[in-house]
Amino acid sequence: MHLMLYYRPCTWTVITDRGGAGEAGSAGFGRCLCWLLWPSFFMNYAAALTAYERVAALDPQNPEPLVVKSRLYMVNSNVAAAHATASDAVALAPNDPDALAALARSEDWLGDYETALEHALDAYELQPDNVETLAIISEIYADVGNFTQAQTYIDQALALDAQHTLALRNSAYLLEKLGKYQDAIAVLDQALKQAPQRADLHLEKARIYRVGLGDFQNAMLAYRAAVDANKTAVTLDALGEGLYNVGDHLAAIRTLNDALELDPNYGPALVHLGMALYSRRNYEDATAAFDKGLPLIGDAAREEHYYTAGLAHVYKEPRECELAQPWLQKALEKNPESTPALTGVKLCGNVPGS
Image (cartoon, rainbow, N blue to C red; front, side, top):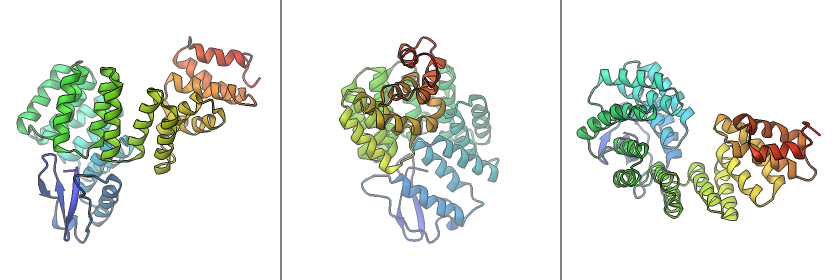
């Protein structure tokens, strides 16, 4: 029950994954909290998160608002916050299947597959007909390459509820893993009929079009649809990266700056901005974006991010080899034969700081 909220005096009504409405927890759960989040199936996630923080404060022993917050964080790609919030929910209610499932999904996205599966199966034992739990177990098995088990659990989930948004999303994810890209897109379209405000589903489509099918035109349409569904730093960053990938660097810079207006510390947008600025030979601003953004994204940084950051310092006037070398070395740690990184090291005379 995490997709949408709309106002009803002194109660909360939640638009569920089926698209229907249901009361959100106990009478005290939403007492005296009146919030409007229902313009044409549009979801204001920031407002929803703020509202649920207030709900949690009013009912601190209730894990439900924490579970909903964790799901919202996952939808908005804030996995660390989702994990922290789900952990708090499990601490309050160790035998709550929804809390355990929420924690399992965040652990899966963090790459802790063994712990994720343990918590998901614990949730399954407590409530074997929970569609969300079944879908999450399928997702975990898909991530570790056990596609047979993934198919078994997603089939069970969809047999219980063929219109459940997460079950449809995870069915599409499995199809993507199996290389059935068009089928995956068709299932995501089905999910979007249930939850058209879910920008993350549009981003999933964009990834399949771009990576799976090499269809950049439809990928760009999906990126723009994500921004239309919910304009956040995440969706604007995705669109900006897409514009960069198709060579529209000026539009990418504008879009990425828009993302950073919403969240000045959103690491992916800073790094993608650095890439776009480097392509425009604006090394001064590129180095500033990289130097701030790369530490924020940590291990998610790719080889090309590191060597481009290093080269931006190399080509900057005056040359900054001392600042370039750490990024060039990180690129070489990922690929000792990285030609751009080796070029940067050579331009600096093979000696850090020279």
